[in-house]
Amino acid sequence: MKTTVISAIIMVMFVFPSIVPAQEAVPVENPLKTEMRLLDSAFKNLIDSLIFNNPKTIQEPFEEVHKAKKNTEAALEKGLIKLPKNNDKIKDFIKMDEEFHHNMEGLIEASGKGNMKKVQDITHKLLNGCVQCHNRFRN
Ligand code: HEC
Image (cartoon, rainbow, N blue to C red):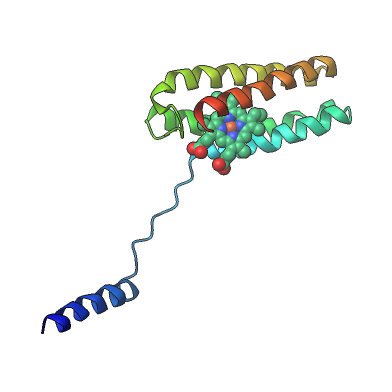
């Protein structure tokens, strides 16, 4: 009797998931990750533009990053972003992010003027920004 009950329970445990479909979590994309992936491709494009001396190809992918930043900001305001590391230091994160975007604006201005020396200097600053922010809030 006891064994029958136990095997019945075990059977139900095995069968149940197949007859009641598991609640599928709706995949909500984290806007920070979306922004980061756009930034990643904008940055790689920047490196190519720099080494091939093409100032005109720099700006466009950064426009996409700029648009995505608006979604990140809205999500940050609503407290919807959870940083993988040091989530309690969100104010420092915002400060680093602002500084990074400020450098990005300088980059676009310099590329618009075809000032590749300045573009190169700011590219170094931006790279440091990626590494610093990831060390503190991601890695
Ligand atoms: C102000 C902080 C900050 C800066 C600056 C920053 N990142 Fe990030 N990045 C993050 C955080 C935080 C994550 C982790 C997001 C998560 O997993 O929720 C991340 C994640 C990423 C990811 C992974 C996205 C994914 O789909 O999981 C890539 C790629 C990336 N960053 C590229 C870059 C590049 C390239 C730069 C510089 C050009 C950069 N990031 C600058 C904070 C930053």
